[in-house]
Amino acid sequence: DWNAQHIVDELVEEVRAQVGGGRVLLAISGGVDSSTLGLLLARAIGDRLTAVFIDHGLLRLGEREQVEAALKPLGVNLITVDARKEFLGHLEGVSDPEQKRKIIGREFIRAFEREAREHGPFDFLAQGTLYPDVIESAGGLSADKSGAANIKSHHNVGGLPDDLQFRLVEPFRTLFKDEVREIAKLLGLPDQIRMRHPFPGPGLAIRCLGAITEEKLDILKRVDDIFISGLREFGLYDGCSQALAILTPIQSVGVMGDGRTYSYTAALRAVTTDDFMTAEWARLPYDFLATMSNRIVNQVHEVNRVVYDITGKPPATIEWE
Ligand code: XMP
Image 1 (cartoon, helix red, strand yellow):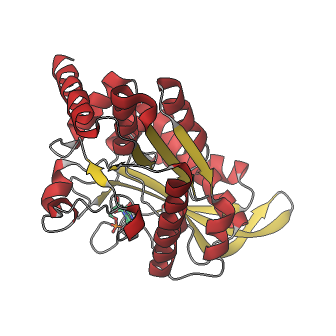
Image 2 (cartoon, helix red, strand yellow):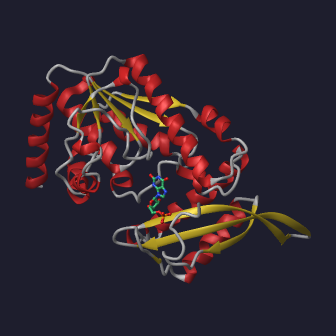
Image 3 (tube, rainbow, N blue to C red):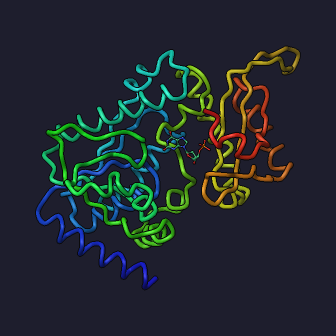
């Protein structure tokens, strides 16, 4: 693709000119924007990029390995931080959704700062800000002429302390998502990440309803993996804007063999939308839903009931918390 090649060449030159001999820090979320940015920066400045991927334990099954396998072989100097214990510890007993978000945002910044100090000093902070973000936050981050850094994109939280002030590198700030996906293809990002649905910063924490335990998270990860893999397998993934599994706190009676069970209800949700402000529930084929339900109850013994969310937004939101 000539156009993508042209954009990549230009961005590489631009980054080199801005960064000079400086060092750049980047937070990798596992999404397409930050992953593509990692690849671009690795191409532009090699090991003067340090990419940090924080595993907060709220990622999808195998996601961390998938991100590592995608970026490391392509030369991204990637540091994975195992912060699972920390995050789960702070979330223990917390059931309020907004409280969960606050804690995760705060702990993310804390972990990121720690890595910045340990591997620093850095001159720049790179962010995968896109053109629509620039417009949306006019007067906020992007209009901040002082260059003070805000880690905003994935965690809805505020700035860094004074001793960790970087200049921003935002090579994508004139691009739209489609263009980033084109660049990603050229840079060799696997389609699984390149075409991935959006995934919220707080991750599975807001899909594991109520107070989170390691056991519930583990159940949710397995249900989610069956659903998402199933959508891919049946060629339905790209037709949905976002798909997710939810573990409800509801336990109900079921029957298995000769015995009664008393297990969890899992919910599946898939939506189509242009802007995520309003959404329709995806009309997934009944046969597909039947297959998913069978697989889930057969493979995840802690679940004995599967429901499909047939509510639009509004009045429901896409996430359940
Ligand atoms: P709702 O549930 O509000 O979601 O209909 C709309 C879109 O926003 C995502 N979402 C979040 N993303 N941090 C994020 O980074 C959050 O706290 C958060 N909450 C919702 C959601 O996944 C959907 O794409």
